[in-house]
Image 1: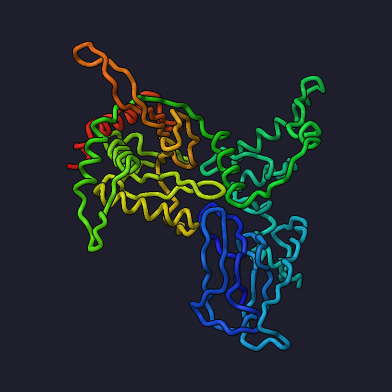
Image 2: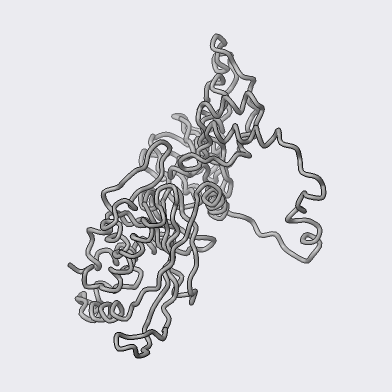
Length: 434
């Protein structure tokens, strides 16, 4: 029985073995943990679905393997000559793909060719390649056929479809770009990294899976999502007073500790969730052939973790009391920092919040996390001199919020309405408590 590398998330294409709980020759019961796998988003323990004896371990600790690879083999008989320590076999190099086959030809399996354990599930060769590239990007059938006909390498194409899917139009653009005349040496830009950099004292830092995934997804976001930005200054003096009163009156547990402590971020999650309900046209995302409009406000919150960031999602945030929302956010943030989030805890969401106010950042524009349609960037609270109702000058606490919008589904006026509703909820915080 082959043990395959599982897919721990829709966008996860590979995983790294960080620990084996069983050694070659040891017995395994169904439900026992076999290994621990680290992806760009989570670290998870993988249980066995069968009982048996560990025959081989194909992927050693610290090795990255693609989803679907055979990482170990279980059998029913004992392994001769095995010891208690695990022996690992280096993963075989992927074998070259055979030439394309017609409809009447026999499959390579029936011809007796052994399966490549890193490509256990084969795509029929008449389909002009695999439906998903090694980096996890999906390719439509027509795009695969056009690319095969024009001898275009799909890995070099940035998809414009939903979740970065490569479409026929993307391949046609690549064919057109290839036929265009090459720029002259005078117009050609210099290489970004050359002797001017490599000749200086430096050291090379490894790129882990999380950082590589962040680079890939955000490059895709800026290349395929038409961003525009809206900013608003928000008065928060009243919000500060309400927050202090709520926390001061929090119920204590048997140890005398408050059962909740509301933060500014908690209020912002609630305010954005209610704003999406007040402006439901913005509670949408762009899909391949339609716009998806959602009933509830599912809000992601960016959490800094070693080596990058994760964005856990609070589902139906508009329906949750502030205390419950606050405790859920704290639990999700703690699991995110431990890389222990489950896939259902970071997938989905229509929008996200990125709060850098605690780092004294005045304002900034965040990059949308696809396939979401917006992201709200929160800056630090500051004291501004403002004119009061009597035309006098007073000092007030304010912050700047910048909304990044996907222009495919959120136009300027719609984005302004969403940001305006968010500001109204923060400036009249008691509305969020009823």
